Image (cartoon, rainbow, N blue to C red; front, top):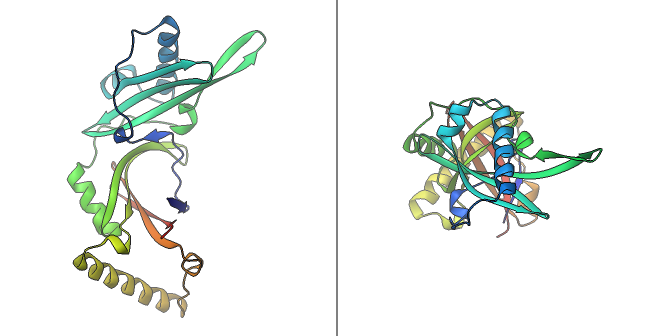
Length: 221
């Protein structure tokens, strides 16, 4: 289990496609159609056009019970796919129920993404940013109130590296320690290391700008 500890926060209800298996669903009821239409409208209101939505969003699944009202959308642009989950609640106004869509917060203000890095370029940039990594996934959500598309991954744990990768990472760490010593005059082991938790690095490549943002995390040995 990875425990994030970073200033870089993506506020998003957004899951990898591999998390779900597509299942057949009975014909939509009028209530489900209304839920889907409301979810679509909520996403478009974040800043997208109807044309862009029709091209890049595809209905995946809808749940419409009293305790579970969700619409799941597959979002794809230039081969980058991810899942957006819109959990729908409500508040009452008089005798009326007013729907509250989670995508309003999880996406924030959107813009129409058209040009992105291709996957191979994004993977190369991730490797240059955090070294050997594992479990890359596509994320789409709000950063500082604006929806961004990212390739996210965690640096490989030292015990999972090959001999060649381990040597390369040791050189990277040694270089980082020397820089820290030069900058501060001392190098202090992290509190997480003292507690026996293994520190890891989490990388996020912005698929539009190409910028890499790194954050720290912890994982139990």
